[in-house]
Amino acid sequence: MSDKPNSTATRPIVTRFAPSPTGALHIGGARTALFNWLYARHTGGKFLLRIEDTDRERSKPEHVAAILDSLKWLELDWDGEPLFQFARADRHRAVAGELLARGHAYKCYLTPDDLAAMRARAEAEKRPYVVESPWRDADPATAPAGTKPSLRLKTPRSGETVVADQVQGRVVIPNKDLDDMIILRSDGAPTYNFAVVVDDHDMAVTNVIRGVDHLTNTARQTQVYHAMDWPLPAFAHIPLVHGADGAKLSKRHGAQGTDEYRAMGYLPAALRNYLSRLGWSHGDDEIFSTAQAVAWFDVADVGKSPARFDFVKLGDLNGHYIRASSDAELMAHIRAFLPHAEGGALLSASFAAAGWDKLAAALPGLKERAKTLPELVDGARFIIAQRPLALDDKALKLIDADAKLAIRNLSALFDDSPAWDAPSLEAIVRGYAEAHGQKLGKVAQPLRAALTGRSVSPPVFDVMVALGKTEALARLGDQA
Image 1 (cartoon, rainbow, N blue to C red):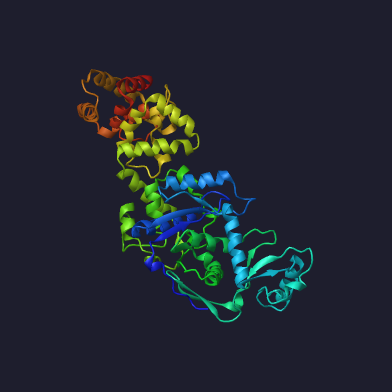
Image 2: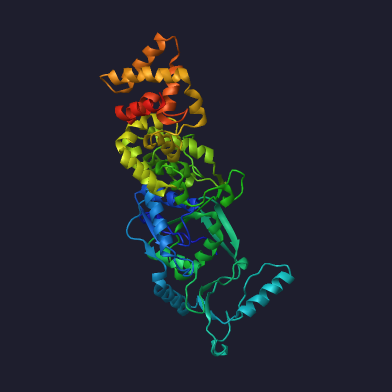
């Protein structure tokens, strides 16, 4: 069977993302959703969402909510309302009945024991296990009484099925390797490979973009399209995401769920930028806006080779997006992030009590060295630290007798200063250091230790401004 021409070129582009709600949104699934979204937005088409919840034991409402939440966080907006596959079972059964009436399907009375025996024979003869049901051409009158049959698709036994794939190229599968797949189980439940085709057709999907691990499914699904005389969508099977070691991405490589990346403090725009580069490229461009990705993206530019996930590169890219964000944008990201962070509720309450404006004031210095939001929040802990501060070992060593004297003298100068801004405070410290024949760092380091409890922090004068005059002088007084 050759690849039948389809009419997608004359129809508005419609892509879809169809996750199963059996767990959180996998990061590989997020990339698949992104590619579908990018292509739909690039072509001015629609991006639809379908929840494939036919596995009733494993599908959970909380998983549906988590998937929707992750897509919203990634800012991948879909068109219309999500479609739920399980609710369409009657439609699937109706199409199965039509296939039966057309002679493209048949009732099969093979039992689990029959199938097990077939598998055993195939293994003994060292040949592929392909179900060849004797009920394909049997007289229905010979059917065993009281046995509920499954419904199988009657597929060609000779020739080949061709998938004209936009990424993988022309893929040929001998029909002898494709058995008559079940489309309805004996209990009347539609199977995945069948329901997917009916749903894609009814949703007017023109382009199916999914992982290369679905390629065999596509060969089976095209048989349903042909049997129903439906136009084929354009297929694009994108490479899988691998870990840095070249193996398929798994738990041992690190975070799996998109929600984990959110909790690790990556920005949505940074993750979109990084995921779009896993398998697709636009020249040598590494950093680009979502608007640029929409303008540039084409399925034809997706490569065949598996993409390798590199946490170091993601961290560097995220750091760039943190630095490039306005202070207002970054504050919004922090406040949205904290509920998902460990101990985030307490941190939110603490920053609120101290005043979010203090954190906002510290952001210019904080964001220069942070690669993730937790690093940024950790750097801002000096704002919510309670007096007297607990100094770490390195900070303690900085506050010796000479440092205490300098802190007392500087505190008096700070108190007399008419202005409380970074340039004015820096001028005071520079003047003091020059007057005492010392380098600026020698004087500023003990101030940092007294104000933050650490030897490393944002610029010390930014710290003082963020804390405010009263709190800063009180902390210096504690160590003087």
